[in-house]
Length: 190
Image (cartoon, rainbow, N blue to C red):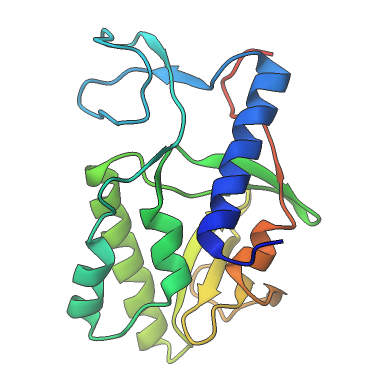
């Protein structure tokens, strides 16, 4: 199997859409919000609150948010987290891990990417203040736990806000992604 994270993410996205189609017979849907547009939306000229189909799409060009975040922090951020958030525009994607269900966080549009920047900045500053290794989140559970990439070596960890990492889940984001099973998106009819 190709260990390149971009290729693994491409494969996972394709699997997610296959699972969606198999279980629901169509792409995932959500209510259209004209104030929250995205290249992911399939319908042309939707009306407010109309249920629209969507699918992940490659960012063209990829967002420069991580370059700006790196400059603001004066810390180089792990390339895996850059690839994770700048390869696709997408609504969050559900998946199953051996420990339970989780939600993979992705960005819907440029405004969502700016929200992410603010959230990552706050998380990284809290880690610095607590004198803990820097980590960057990319997924969350239904509870108060989330999955992070350790900025030093790219390993994946389970964490709780404001606490030290609980335990290592994988040696890399690609390795972690390969253990996941895609699930149909919530709100889709079965």
